[in-house]
Amino acid sequence: MQTFTEENYLKTIYKLSAEDASVTTNQLAATLQTKAASVTDMLKKLAEKKLIDYVPYYGVTLTEIGKKIAVDVVRKHRLWEYFLVEKLKFKWDEVHEMAEELEHISSVVLVDRLDQFMGYPAYDPHGDPIPDKHGRIKQQEFKPISQLNVAEGGVISGVREHSPAFLQYLEKLNLMLGNQVKVIEILAYDQSVVLTVNQSENRISISKEAAKNILVSA
Amino acid sequence: MQTFTEENYLKTIYKLSAEDASVTTNQLAATLQTKAASVTDMLKKLAEKKLIDYVPYYGVTLTEIGKKIAVDVVRKHRLWEYFLVEKLKFKWDEVHEMAEELEHISSVVLVDRLDQFMGYPAYDPHGDPIPDKHGRIKQQEFKPISQLNVAEGGVISGVREHSPAFLQYLEKLNLMLGNQVKVIEILAYDQSVVLTVNQSENRISISKEAAKNILVSA
DNA sequence: ACAATTATTTAGACTAATCTAAATTTTTAT
DNA sequence: ATAAAAATTTAGATTAGTCTAAATAATTGT
Ligand SMILES: [Mn+2]
Ligand SMILES: [Mn+2]
Ligand SMILES: [Mn+2]
Ligand SMILES: [Mn+2]
Image 1 (cartoon, each protein chain N blue to C red):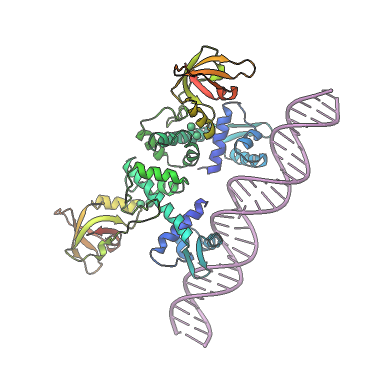
Image 2: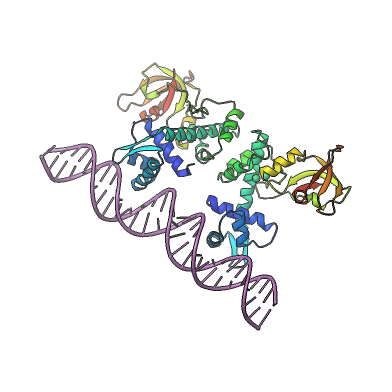
C-alpha cells in the first residue's frame, strides 16, 4: 500500500516518461511543486520499495510494479473525471482538482463498479484514454493541430493541457471535443494558426502554443 | 482546512457526544484505535484551533465550528454510502470502509451535486439520517427492539452497529430495513428476544445485545 | 480521610514528508 | 583540458501524527 504522496510521485514519473525515457529530479520537482532535495529523498524511498529504478544524478524509470500502480492511479483519475462530467454534470474544466483527490481512494472493487456503472468508457472528458482494469490502454494516434498543413483538418479528440483557463478558452472558441477543424492559414512570422470550426464561415486564430495543445484525429 | 486525522477526531467526538455530553480521552482512544497519549496531543491541537473546548482531565466538547465540520463529514459519509448502495449496487455491509475514505474528499460542490444526483435522500443504507447542506438533521424517534414489550412491534428502520459481521447476520435472519417485526417473547434469564418477521410463521431468536442494536419505528 | 486504583498528561523518541543551505557531481563552454 | 555553470545530493531542521514509559491528577473503597 502506498501513501497519497508516493502515488503522486509514481503518477508523475509515469506521465513524464512519455516524453523522455528517464525522468530527472528537477523535472519532478517542477511538476510536483516541491524542491529538488525533497524529490531526492522520495526517490530513495521509492527505489528502496522497488517501485522505481533510480541512478543517482542520472534519473529514474518505473519498475513493472511501479508502472502498474501509476497506471492504476491514472485509471482512477480519468474514470472519476468521466463520472463527474457525465453523471454529476460538471464541466470539463471543473473536474481535475476533484479527481486529484478521488484518484487516491484505494478500493479496487469500487473503481471497477464505477467503470461498469458508466458502461466502460474509453476516453475521459479531455480525450485521454482510460486504462482498463488490467492496465491496458487504447493507443491513440492523435496529433496536435500544430502538425497539420494548410487545408488539412480533423476532429478535435484531446488536449495536452488541463488547466481551467485553457479549457475555458477552448470553449469560448467552440474548440470542444468532437468538433471538426480545418487549417486555413499558418502565419509565417509566429506560426499562429487560422482555422474554421464545423465548416463555419468564421475564422479563428490561435497561437502556436495553443495549436500544440489541441489534438485531432483524421 | 483540516487534515484527514483531524476530521476523524471531530467526527468521533461528535458521535460519542450523543451518549455523554462530554467525551473522555480514553473513549476517543478506544474508538479511534489509538493510545491515550496520542489523543491528548491531538486534543491540544484541536483546542488551539478553536474546534473543541478541552478541559484537561475532564473531557472535551465540540465548538460550533467543530460541530459544523463534524456534521459535514458525517453528511459526506452517509451520502457516499447511499451512492455506493443505490447506484453502484453494493450491499449494505460492504460500504462503510469505502465511505471512511470518501468522507474526506474536500469539495463542497461535489457532495452537493452528488446529493442532487441521488434526489436528496433522507436516510443512508443503515437508516442513519443524512444531514442536509446546512447541517440540519431529520430527528428520528426510533427505539431499539430491546425496549419493546411482548406483542409490540415495528418496522426496522436503523442499526446501531455497522460491522459487516453484524449486518450479514441480520441479512441471514431477514432483519433488513423496512421489514416488520413483532416481539413474541422475552426470555427472563438472558433477555433474549423471540420475534417474527413480516408476519411469517417462523420465530427467530436474537440476543439482548443484538436487540439493542436494531432500531424500529412504530 | 486516605490508600489504592484508574484516568490522563508529560517526556522523550520515531517515521513520513518537507525545507534551506552546503557540498558534490555532471555538463557546458572556452 | 579545465573553469564556470547547472543539476543533484547530503546535512541538519521542522511539522504532523504516533508510540512507550514515567509522572501526576482524579476517583473509589474502606
Ligand atoms: Mn485531470
Ligand atoms: Mn482528464
Ligand atoms: Mn458507515
Ligand atoms: Mn451508514
